[in-house]
Image 1 (cartoon, one colour):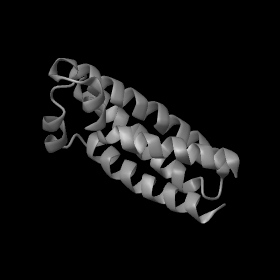
Image 2: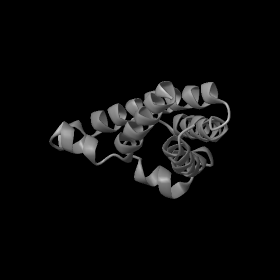
Image 3: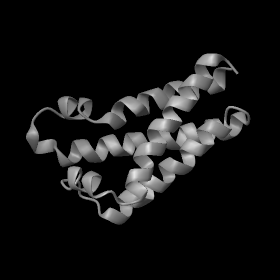
Image 4: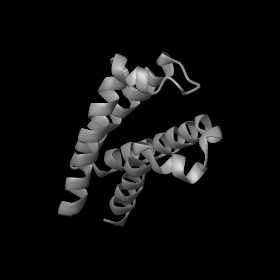
Amino acid sequence: MPLAVTVLSVVLAIAFGATGAAKALGSRALLDRVAYLPVGAGVLRTAGLVEVVCAAGLVAGVWLHPLGLAAAAVLAVQSALAVAVHVWAQRDRGSLVAAALRIPAAYTGALVVLLAGLLVWT
């Protein structure tokens, strides 16, 4: 596996693992920051659990390529859904593109799609 794929997998695993753990544990600071979203704490905790499991899958994907690809695919879909929910919740606050660009999931999701493409290509 190319070094770039390994590094990207580990970096994304750290990012999704950290934010996923905060969501899964119900971090009060995080829940307060996303209180405007039309979803409950249970949905956020489930999303966090998915992120933690997929972060482990990204790391395992360094050795088991199909597992890494599956984890990247799930995270790409989850990131797209997260961007859609955040943009929908902010739809009355101006430009939808500007709202999407303020959401970290837009950037991490793009990196996950890049990783999935690299995994398929290698």
